[in-house]
Image: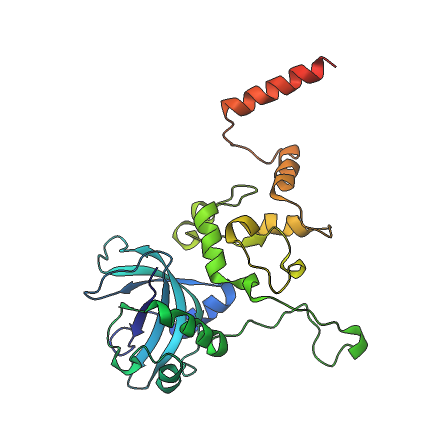
Length: 278
């Protein structure tokens, strides 16, 4: 799945209020936008999109996103992109740094969107973005430095696959975008802004996996809405399984409108008959 480069020249198009977009991405995790590709071929859904600023005031790599749909209705030469990390204007990674880190791309000759990224250059771009891109916000549950005695602070190791966008995309591609426990769909509830959105949950907490563990996005991750994700962890040392969550909701009468197959109904009848005989 080939990544593409999107070029943004505010002098030619400035249909968004960029500082507000940066703030929305920081607050919600993404911002959806339709992006024209001129005469170039559209990228497939799931492809990475790298946003490059190119105007008279400055140039450089300024954002990252994922293509969520190809050729949206009414835009035959466009893609729908979910931007998931953006740098403030003025903080973009300059062309000199880009050329040194990813020499396979002629950064000074990018004048239109849709340029494909060679597979060999994709890991170089990701590594560069992990260094110069937006850093994760401070954890509000952590104490302010200097407010807790040194002997009361413990060191916690976090592994990068906890927040891997590639793993999340693979999980959703297999399991879908509805909550695996309650069936909630952000797209049905919120329309277009909820399309392709769902948090993912580690069946085994990432803190219990070693640094050499190779994550299986299909077997180790599952889509869960925020409510079910919270209940999976609430009050227990080890997270509840999806099956446990469904049993709990079913016993509370919450799981309504489910489709029960004839095989499932027959299994219930057989179970009742066997139990009645004892």
